[in-house]
Length: 225
Image (tube, rainbow, N blue to C red; front, side, top):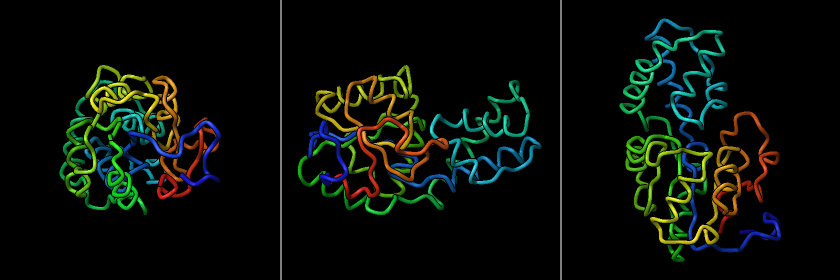
């Protein structure tokens, strides 16, 4: 990592790297937004702007739908399961139409992998969808481990997903760096006991990156190498 980008407590290199998916590795908002619009339309609700969807990403599909309903002062407790099922179907069928890795991501992953670092994805997107988008964008081969929002008993911000990723990588939690974009990622890393950096322009639920409590904020993925 560039010296100007790190705090004194961060290492220059790590044995492993745990990456959030949405808003960190891949700009998934356009396809998530289309699935959300399809869901709202199917259940007779008004559309929302993509700028709002970007603020709601990070806690899973149910939370995103709930935020859209809350924004419209609506409650759909009895329909939530059906809305979630519709959303997942709509999203899975168009999961990589407009989504793409952020600039520098593929180059950085290639360089980290090339120097022997072990890489994992730790996301709140359900595992089957996470695997699908990584496969469709030809990124799956970079990662030895994938932890989705439904892989462990507790999703981020609990420590469980990060700890499980390290267990599968056979690495100590202190030998990995968590790379994310939101307070959900920072809280997960802190609870697990690993260092954490955030990308500046991810899906941060409207909270400025420098206010998330990470050890550093990076402007480019290439700052990791």
